[in-house]
Image 1: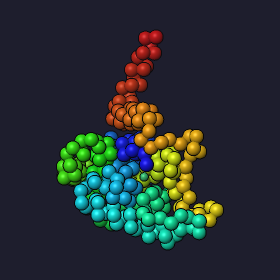
Image 2 (image 1 turned 90 degrees about the vertical axis):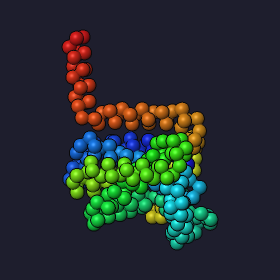
Image 3 (image 1 turned 45 degrees about the vertical axis):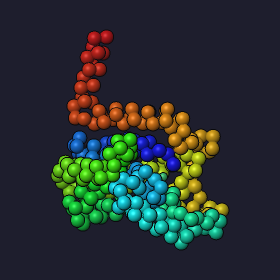
Image 4 (image 1 turned 90 degrees about the horizontal axis):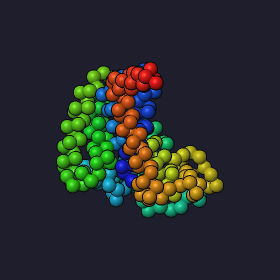
Length: 269
Ligand SMILES: [Zn+2]
């Protein structure tokens, strides 16, 4: 798998891009605070699919609770794999990189979160923020999170969830949370798909040569080694720069100030 920080940063970039284009009728963000909330939720959700094994770093995010949850998701995914397996799909012992790494999961989670938010309002919003922001902390500040321990991460995630919730005053904006979570999951799959192992993104709907869980991946020439030199030296830094630039751009007044400065420079020239 691609490393946690790469997943989280690519989730943030995707969130910032989609926040720009998502129409307000769909719950698209209308203020800078909402854009950042959307992007942060997306960054955290980009780690969610790896909550399907107790071995992953994200399974440690909320201490024993997330470990137990990850174990349950692992079992459930394996059950679903066995239920839908094609005749040539290999036998598996664990559910890692199956159900949670599909388009089906990303779409189901998007609808699920939106439905919960519409049905229950505030508790569902705060709950979603709490989980995704906790994961985002794990992904974006992994060293710090490991040093501080899961209790500190959990408390901070709860505080941030309350703060972010207060930035979401209206019902419409909050519905976009489902989109942000689903988008994050899909971005995670994309990240795993550029590695040698690939992901069964279209499973179990598209049978191919007796398999329903075949992996979508790049030709081996183009695929990267997870945690390898390319990811550390090029992909990670480039994504981080893009994210930082987009965060700056999303701040109210900055694009106008840059345009004004450019006009000034042109006038001088
Ligand atoms: Zn993964």
